[in-house]
Image 1 (cartoon, rainbow, N blue to C red):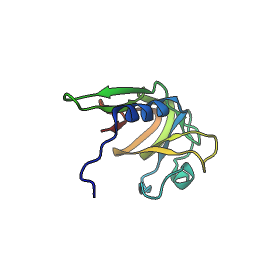
Image 2: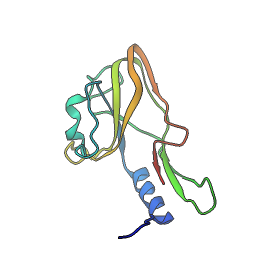
Image 3: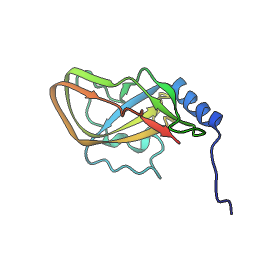
Image 4: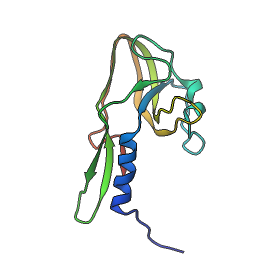
Length: 145
C-alpha cells in the first residue's frame, strides 16, 4: 500500500484552467437543502431546493464572471492553486432567502451540468427588494492543495 501520493503542479494548474474556461453559474438553495457530495453530482440532484426567481435572480442561477486560476505557494516546493471569481452582486430589486449555493458548469441541461462546489453561507441570507452581495473567500472559491 502506498503511503504518499501527490498531484503534480501541472495537473493542478491544468484542472483549474479547465474550470476557468467553463461557463459557470451560481444557483441559490433554500435552508432545507442538505449538502451531500457523495450523491449530488449534477444540478438535477439539487434543483428542487432552488429558491424562487426574483428580480435579477433567475431560475437556473446567475452567471459567474471573472474566473481566474491563481498559484498559491505558501512555502518552497508547495504548489497549490485556487479558483477565484468576481464577487457576485444580485440586485437591486431582489427578494431572496437562501442558505446554500452551488457553483456549476452550465451545459444548458440540468442532468449534465456538473456541480463544481457547494457552499454553505454562515447564516441564512434574507433580502427584501434589495441587493445581496456574495463575497468569495480571500483565498478563492475552490482550493486545490
